[in-house]
Length: 343
Image 1 (tube, rainbow, N blue to C red):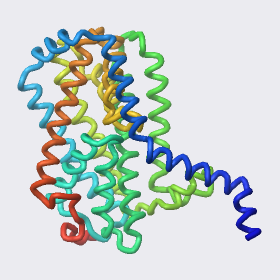
Image 2 (spheres, one colour; image 1 turned 90 degrees about the vertical axis):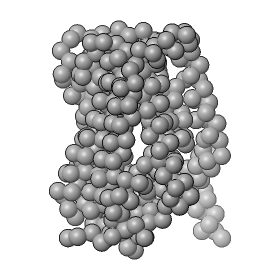
Image 3 (spheres, rainbow, N blue to C red; image 1 turned 45 degrees about the vertical axis):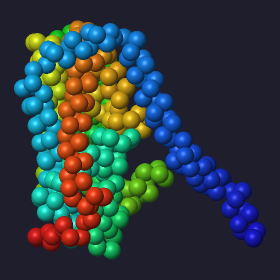
């Protein structure tokens, strides 16, 4: 009893209680924060635009551009499925979903990520599906691979932004700050990329929370597959970026590929924000700020571009919903879909 009391009074015990309370509060009221953040973002955007002008801007985007954008976003999910299988193999999974199953699961995950807050629910579904791929360490291994994929995606986003900064030689009003933050973000993403394969070895050098995460990461047993997963992450983000560029080009003729590299990846990253629903509101703000300062676009055209790119993602996400209904009617189960990973 005395030991329990001492634990309660210890600084470590107090820290654990605070963290537990914070998690409970977020689980209970996080939805309010996300919907509130989304509402605030949309209200702010509404003060910058004229709805009639945004509707008129929609007519300037050709059907061909929209079809191509949808196809490219769908292709990015297909590439993501290949990346998932490479990451599983890199971390020593004993089995992997077949390519066809992985693609289907990625589309189903896309449905969850697009239509539910936080853009992570679909990744949790994939982690559950891949549980048996790692044998006795299934939960840890499957979650680690999902975490690794997220980190690789962020690295790819920053890599594209840095490429855009390097390719753009014009004296942009936002260039200096954008270059600084892209380099800082890129350096952080690169550091994470280097640490992922070496997590356990570096754990003793990291502070408490990061050390605990690092100790749970499985070791990379096939470096070439990890390198392939990294390159595939660049391909997934590049496909989505080109989709946005096609829409921007119709709305603002003359926009260059380098210009799009400065806008689309930053706007896409808003989907990961925990205080919005799918990045809605924050994404439109990113388009307005960057579109105006980099391209000289009107707020109306920038918001139209953001909404049309979002519509493309919604269409692809809906396709994942159809696959979910046509499949099991719930989150797919992994064991029947997995097959041994060849050495």
